[in-house]
Length: 236
Image 1: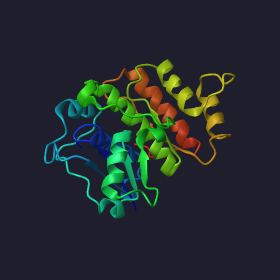
Image 2 (image 1 turned 90 degrees about the horizontal axis):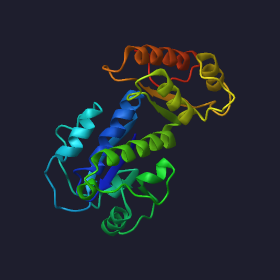
Image 3 (image 1 turned 30 degrees about the horizontal axis):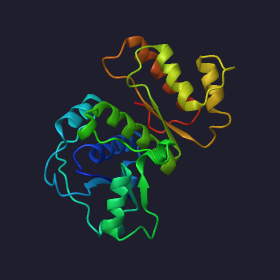
Image 4 (image 1 turned 60 degrees about the vertical axis):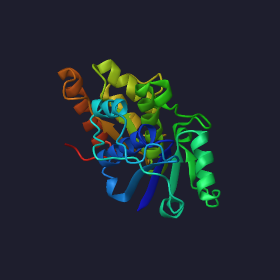
């Protein structure tokens, strides 16, 4: 069991978003039972408060429920209790080192490092008021964390309204070379060849209110992943 703790200043915006986004990814990948995921604050300012309403609304818009979550403060013993302690910005990391008395086991990380942007930060939407951008950055970084831990690549079709947008997402996530056409035969060839051998793919399907054409074609894409033996989650 791997234990992960996401940390930000108040534990009402960024770190609970990361907690519930990552939980959602794990559940969809069928991996939730292998992990414990939680979040905490470096400060005491918001202790006992629920997730901030604007962030709660953004999460709900993506089908993620954070009901019951209340802010709690980081404790010194959390360093022993968790395997990874992941902050949202450098100030969080500085305060984590202060609380823990350092990082002797190398457990502290910046979430954006997992998105391939080492040293960058997830801006605090309490100040920027851009809760959508915060969610997008958290989601991208959590996908990177999932790949880091499991070798699972997340392919997100949730907001794809048509077939071209499905292929744009595939091109981005599969390192799709220009000489491949956009069709299911090409997709199967890519999935069964290099560089994707050994990888698994988590497909996040279009929303229920997406155009029917996109929903039906996404199901054909999912079947192609299943036929190639690289689908992370079971077929519905």
